[in-house]
Amino acid sequence: MSGHHEDSLIIRTWHEIAVHALASRASDIHIEAGLRGTLVRIRVDGLLQVQSHFPLDLHERLITRIKILARLDIAEKRLPQDGRLLVGNDFSKPDVDCRVSILPTLYGEKAVVRILPNRIDELSIDQIGLLPEQLTIIRSALSQTNGLILVTGPTGSGKTRTLYSCLHELNQSHRNLCSIEDPIEIRLPGVNQVAYHPRAGLDFATIIRALLRQDPDVIMIGEIRDSASAQLAIQAAQTGHLVLSTLHTKDARGALTRLNSLGIDDESIQSCLRSVSSQRLVRKRCQACEGSSPTENINCSACKGSKRYGRIGIHEVLSSNHLFNPSIKHATMADVGLHYLKTGLILHSDLEAEIGTWQ
Image (cartoon, rainbow, N blue to C red; front, side, top):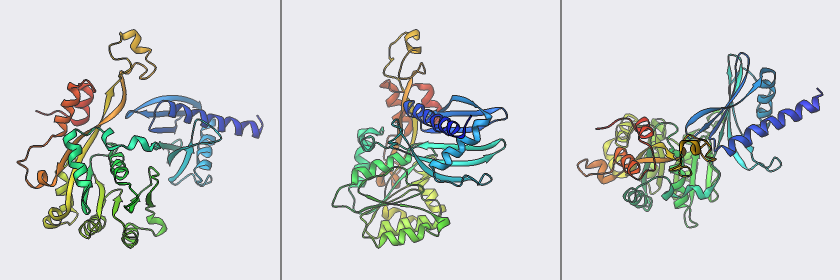
């Protein structure tokens, strides 16, 4: 086979993998080398599924193709690399942003391509699974001119989308919105987004100090990950800025303990914490084949027989009153989950798997 044909084969193969992933609503594409071949898997609604297998001799060329598109070093095969690329149904006009991670493994490099949501209209705050009373708490916190709003939960629980939905809600011409992210996941027109590049000398403290000189009204910090970022976030929240960020905690009240462990005193927390929400993502029941027979269900074009299509957020939202006066009743994640269970939106097994069993 000539070099030109080989090139076009790899270009076409990658394009077909990407188009299939987009059509399947995948969030990630995994390309991994095994002993005998290349396995391509895609993550749909939180679960990995096999998409295709390729001969092993195609693996390195496929990884090289991804590296070229992501502007990575094709000669470097021993170190992890990160980058970005675009995919799309139209080969000549790719329009979907992706994040790329390359990692050396036993039989060759593994590529994971995260497909980032690019539709701004999907960022409406009333579309992420909040109950009306929870929406009221969050909107009330967002209407403040200063303070800290936190979104918590494990990796992959939809925290970033919730943050972006809050930014989208605040994105009006009379406000200056800035964000510090690692990496920038969704490009939001009207928001001054800064990527966090510690290796290039652009560390968190440098960025936030520079941002504070940019006359911001709202600052979104991708994640509070250490004492320095916690201190800076609290300082910004106390000096007339509305700060939005995420924390890795099991539930909403765990944010208080986590902030304490990062060196923030109770008085500072009480003075500026406006609301904390915690969340998980649960798979939704497929509406297209609701009530169908098992035979029809297998042929459902939406869920391909899985009976599930898409995911919804299950939230626990605490206002400052709830946080500092635990006797006030609020809707827990279990309450919200049971509400969605009763409406027939989700299945019991999925709910139990995501937020565990409760009394």
